[in-house]
Length: 212
Image (tube, rainbow, N blue to C red):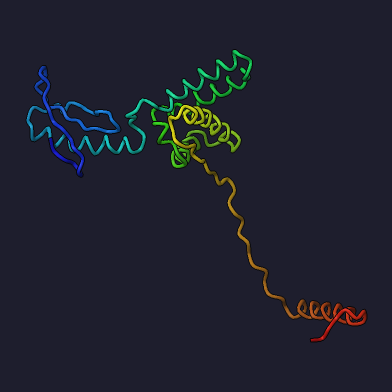
């Protein structure tokens, strides 16, 4: 055993293999692989590089430790939705729409990501990838994709697979620059002054003006 950034990484040999194997624990699971090395020093060097790569994948939701990938939860959500359609509680047309959107435009991008890792950053990255691949995708189309993702995440939340629903934020419209009004010129200032004076004279005549 040895440590990488304080994390315990173990090295071992299997009875039927001449290669060293390495592994570490994450979320109650053992992540392991063969180093393809027979020399122990070379195996340790491989294990260190592999650990950093695999830990980064786990932290970014690319490598799923717990088997709650977006694709798996999607299938669970669809199975439940189909049972509701069969009982007359949901629309088959809506179900078909969800399946079409998610299978064609969402799963190719998000299928392997752990549902616990899906947040606003994942949504923004996904949206940017979609716009790169389909530049003509409208805001309405992106909204449909977002709703498809939410169907899956709502199911994950209902089944306690995630602790809270992420908030997806969009800024489709840029704020317009608000330019300050230029100062009055002499003509405008005189007009304003005459209007104020006229209004004050009118109030004074009606006894509603007090000159403090």
